[in-house]
Image 1 (spheres, one colour):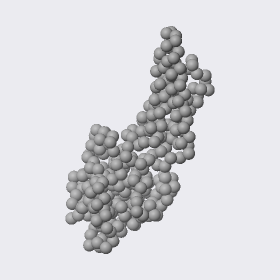
Image 2: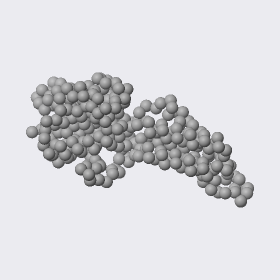
Image 3: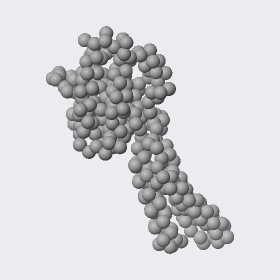
Length: 303
């Protein structure tokens, strides 16, 4: 029998469950699928905004938008178009019911447990397809799925399940950058401008260092390398702030570490205030990269 068995609403940035349907099923396979779903919820920001995973005789489908992901477990025979129509309906209602500020400030699991009532009612409707014919437009969703099919995940993409580690996915290098980032803040713009300024200062000093070497062979060429490495790190920080890439936070931290190391090497050519300025700007933009999280594709409900 084709049915929706479980559904939940999860915050993308940290995997915090916001609401979920009541689960009466004790089937071992379903419980195993829910473990996959739980592990997926912890790394949603790494995945495209519409995905599906085959877990035994069950399918896990999810769609993410505006920092929230809508996830479900259904039988493998349940039509994909109905599954994503179901998730789309949950998404529409949740966006209307709760504002972004309240969602972002939630600290306890299942802070929106009252939404469970809507999930249950919608699940019942979608488990009785005859009642759906006049209430949803399957043609629109079918067209959208053909144009932008859900990404097929594998068990290895989930990570650790039941204590066993799977290889980390590397296939998202071409996908993650297409994800949208949260809107730019004033602090983020300031951090980018300052980082570009630091990169420019490093570049100018590097060019002058090259001229000095050409005039005086006793000059240390390592200073030139340090200046240009600092320039590259500052520019790369700006790139990470603007674009969504795999391991953004880790790359940004490495760039910050490179800024610190290059300035430590240049301590003889710079005073304490100059070094402090470069390091502070590097720390500032690293923080802004971390704060600007990926988000799902915004729904075009009014188009």
